[in-house]
Length: 456
Image (cartoon, rainbow, N blue to C red; front, top):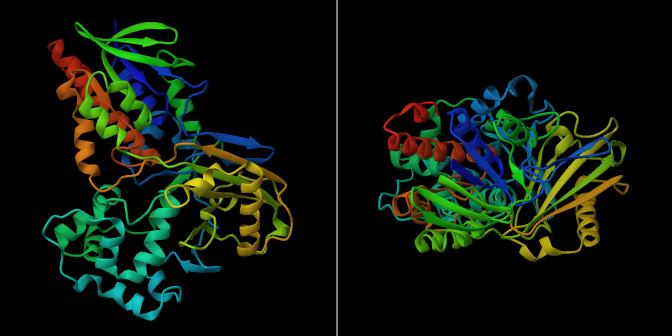
């Protein structure tokens, strides 16, 4: 019997497996697809590099920095390029460049004067004390004004989270903003008192081979390589643990960690814990698509001096764009640029199912109009994600509580993933490591010791 079976070899599952393995536990990782990494797919297209999923790691997330150091990846990381000097927003055909300076939105004409004055008044507005849950849009409109909510926060949610600001819970998506209002009476006062200098975007990094470098390093550091192409069909309780039925036979373990998409987790745990299954099944993940286009630099009039741009509702098919070759060096051949566009999500789910030719042509047309592109792409690639990013809807905290306490109802059963406490790479690492610590602690208590748990 193994100590732990980890189901899912994405960044979350591999992070958990790595921590458990480092603690001396016998861990088996099962992955139904032929490759590891989950959505962390980095593909070379000639001299271009396309990120099919996450494209950055945030150094401000402690778990991300720790993982890079532990895996020997800190020395090879590449930081955000110096060419990132502005943030861009597209509003009904007009692309506005805004300085990354903290007062950028106040000094820019992107927002009308009344909206900018409303932003500045945030520190004088009373804090909400009734504890009622709000969506992101309502919270932002209440604190900073409706103009900021519509023209800044809504496109941010649409482009970065592929979601709807009027549906997502602000406490789940931006818990620190809610805490700042609670503790300081104002978000602005909270930011000032937190003494966090610099632009958060400057903390982003990656590696020459892309974000897929991370799961590859995690897998290589395991004592036993992940088993790919293995589908888990059923999990059953047995004395002292679980019996896991797979497409390649049965395995037994003292504990099971499920680190797959929420709908898959729901199916796996339904016979064991209907309450957990119901909570997991209630987390939607609308389809999304990534359209990567490579151009000759001479064909693009725009300076591409930012991370990319976010689009307001009604501005076209694209929710967000990244200027990949500006963000990190080595993302395009000399004399060329790489651009990634994100479509679908909660805003336009049907668009993420459009034929590849249609998507390529529509994205190229929009980019040409916005960025002044005068020639067709030299490289074009579309990645479809039938299930995209999980959406933290109103009531997410209650669902998360159920999911994170599965082991109190079914001893030895744990869940982890980007549908709990954040969708970023750092959040996934953290989710996996927290689950690993809980598992190691429980197994150590069973054995009457605490050595394994102390190592995580």
